[in-house]
Image (tube, rainbow, N blue to C red):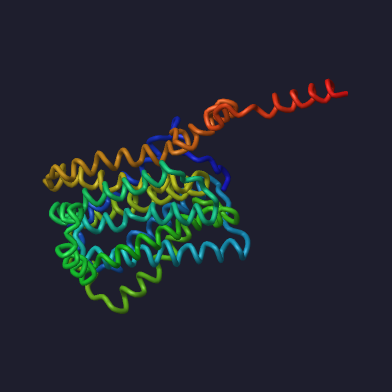
Length: 353
């Protein structure tokens, strides 16, 4: 990676860092009313192919280089399969059967996978505060997206009640959301390698086109009337999800993924359900429960812990900061220091001689 710092540079670019997660959250709200009027694979293709064309047009205007080597196209193709076709296919299919809240919880668990993969593959520092922040973030988004009775039952360790709920989860579409989260996590950790052979913005555009075309093919083969029931407002919502929720959001996200710390960047995904709930309240009249407010607050704390994990003190750092002589005097009590003992030995040798 071009920049392997343990935290993101916020000065002057905070808006651009948060923009992908803002657009993803609001795009989920925009698409809620569209899902009953269309089909999943067609919707996934619409989110990818036009967005990819827009990104390539922007890259051409900015005179960014196109991929030149076979390795570049192979990495882009693999990237398109994992983060394009699989991620959007699982996501769109899961949205048909999954509530938006629980679905967002499953999707936004991917920072945990990104952190582990980045730690294993790139040696990114996580540390005590990073792991605590990731665990806290998972608790926060669970409080936001899960029904209150589910979350409270889990806190009370009511495994009898939760086991029934887990069975119901896997009978619906949540497992598809988990597969989507895994696909996006793998795609995120692939981006530094992709950017070694191709421009990250251009690669993102091509991966959306190459990943979206098979989804259109699947839609043509197995789905019927994917757009005939769409109203003008539905097309407007799809346009927002395509332009901002895909082209702008993914372009910015993978641009930063190619340049910055993956764990820190991916942790900002915890903001997505917060934006979704906020705009769901504004436009759809959805009301946050007290548990969800607590979850939103905990999520903000988790992002702070992850982003500042290399700057926050911990017990091991405190021990290392203590002077060695002081530690020796405390631990060894009245034992004579080695330097003094050697000095006394030398004096005794002189006297004996």
